[in-house]
Amino acid sequence: MPTAVLTRAALWTRRLPVVVGVAAWAWGAVGAAQAQTGIYTCVDAQGRRITSDRPIRECIDREQRELNPSGSLKRVVPPVPTAEELAREEARKRAEAEALAKQREERRKEQLLLMRFPTPEAHQRARSEALHQVQDVIDVVRKRAAELDRQRLDIEAELEFYKRDPNKAPEWLKRRQADNAQQRASQAQYLDDQAREKTRINARFDEELKLLQRLWAEQPGR
Image (cartoon, one colour):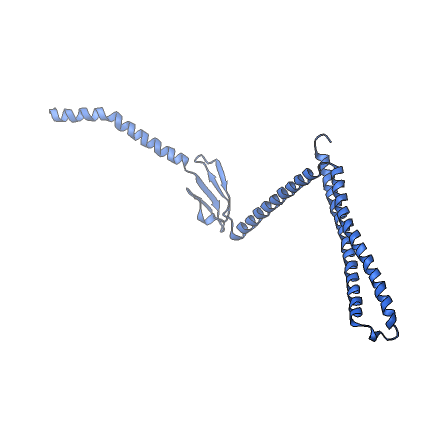
């Protein structure tokens, strides 16, 4: 056999294990890639069962099943939501977020209220102080109303001179009478407003007390 032929044969013999190894590696890589590839299956709107190696467009609006190469279930792919479904989901998430924010805000207010009124006595003192401030205003208004009533009597006494002919009463006295009547009406209205304010204060403290009674009861050691 010629020397050149022997040399090529020897080289092929030496390279054969390498070629076989590369082929085996390539086959293994292909097999591994196939093992990682899922199989998608579904039934479309026309009732046809479709199988593919990727998500099936014809079944985008329905559930698809992704199978392992062995045929076992890998996962269930849900349908792509419609615009209406997305809008509903977005509205649901927004409502949940708003409810959570409201709950946190209410809890924050509860903690502030509890810090302000740690005991029933502290809350009662605050109620009394608030009512006392309004009562002080009422007392001042009543004094002013009493003064206006005395002025009214003086004005009426002066008008007695013109009882037979009220048209002869001087304009300054008429203006004084009208001004007195207007001020007395304003004071009466202000007294009514302060009475409503006392009612509002009591209602607010009553509402706070109901909440505080629960908060106090939830505190450790009570």
